[in-house]
Length: 79
Image (cartoon, rainbow, N blue to C red):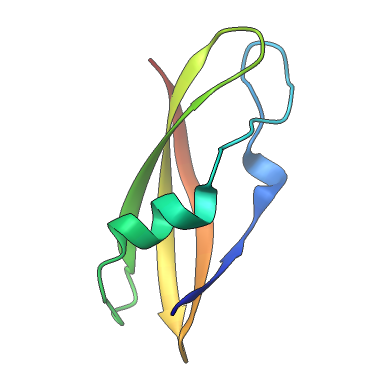
């Protein structure tokens, strides 16, 4: 089982600045997991909806080192 270290400080709504909540984020990341040890890592795309009703696609870069995966926000796009 992989360990995901997630940097949550960028998960904010662009419209109302509320923190975005992604239900079962660890499960969603594991479903998309693709082994990759390169410097670029791999891309994971998550969908979230803010309490104000705005929906987002969240593009994450995932980098693996010693069975630990760091997940960083690449960009957030309103859909």
